[in-house]
Structures are given as structure tokens and as C-alpha cells.
Length: 279
Image 1 (cartoon, rainbow, N blue to C red):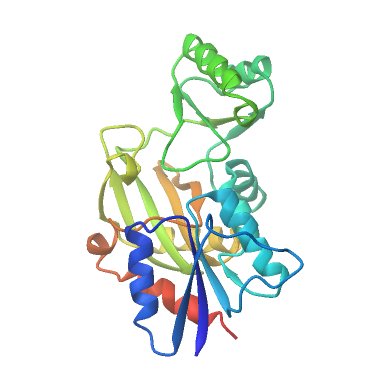
Image 2 (image 1 turned 90 degrees about the vertical axis):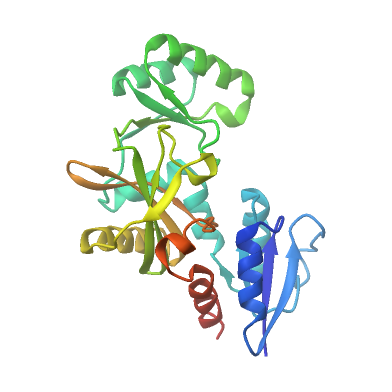
């Protein structure tokens, strides 16, 4: 019997599907760990489990609880290092650049004046994003200097977490982007996310349809997973005239809209991988 810790904030559809899959497996005992309902003595082993599947909605909670388990020799899927690389957009972009993986151009600035200079240098339209965040929240497409000045002023007033300015090249995508699911270093399936809005996340109303896993798409996803750290990842990509470009990578991805669209049992693939990591 192996014990799998299941770390979560709240049980969304995805967590319920993963729990159902885990609990259906013979010789697997699931230990539920709510990341807000307990404290941890860092001088003591946290729990007797063989591995932890990290599904926290809170990036910071998931990161620190994962580190506590790892400090006691308990593997976490995905590891805290992978979470750090995915959870900070600058870090993800820097890794893509360092590994020569196509990705939109990014300029970083750290006060209002230089942020405006960076935006003007990159040109309009461009995109301002918080370095930490998900579901397409607090993204802003900047179409002109007046908009840039207003958004920068708002971000300055929002406080310290918004005074790191991540300025990204705007990619004129064809009304859709691609999310590819990678298990280990093998792409399992992919979807198009289509929307009339420039933000195509399914959490913001984007419609999921199957996207064929071409050799070109599979290859860039494998390279991305190897650069970030193999595990359970979702790679978000744009289509351009020069091929695919990697926008972001997610380590606790949602997949509820992708199972029927692709015909792939994504939670089963994920659970297979988690069990395989237990030595």
C-alpha cells in the first residue's frame, strides 16, 4: 500500500476528478491535506506519506508546503522548483530565452518612469502582466501612451507586488491559443482555446476544441518540459507566422474542459505518473 498526500486549497472539478481516480486505484491510500487547515512544525516530519500531489490554488501555500515535505525527503509532484519556474512569469520567460525556445519578447522595469520607457521601446500594442497570477487576471493590453500612463499609475497604487513591471510583446493570434498537456516529457493532448476576446483562457470564456499533436507542437512542448522540469504541466502557446511560441507554463493546470474535447483521460494519465514516482 502506498500513501499519496493530496495537497489542495479547495476541491474544484479537477481536484475531485483526481481524487476519484486516485481512490479507485488498488493499493493506494489517499491522505487529504488542506493547505489552510493545518500548521507545520518544520523540525518534525509533516505526515507519513510516500509522495504528495500538489494541487493548491494558492501559489505561495503550495510552494511552501511543498518545500516542507521535500525537506523531509518526500517527493512532491510537481516539485517546488518547478512551481517556482512556472509561478513567476519572468522566471518562465527567462528559462525559455536561456534554452532558445521561442517566446514573446519581454522587457522588465522597476519604476513608473522606466516602465513607460520600456512600453514605448517595445511598441503598441503590448501587454502588461503581474509576474505572479493566473486565469488571465489583471492582464492589460496597452494600445497607446495614454493607456500606458493610466495602467502604470494604477499598478503603482496597487502596491509592492505590482511594481515589478513585466512588459510583453503582443502576439496577434488568430482568435485562439493552444494549451498542451505534458505528462513527464510526453505531450498527452492539446486544445485550442478560442474566443472573441484577446484573452482566450477557458476561465474567461474561451471555448475548448481538440488540437492535433503535430510533430512540431510535440517537439516544442517536450523542450519546454525539459527546461522547466518534467512533471505535470500545461504549456500555453501562440501560433505565429514563424511557428509556435511559448507564452506561459502552468504547474497546477485546470483540465475540466479538455477531457471531452480531446478524448484523453487526463486525470488517469496524471495519476499514473504520480504513482510511478513512488520508489
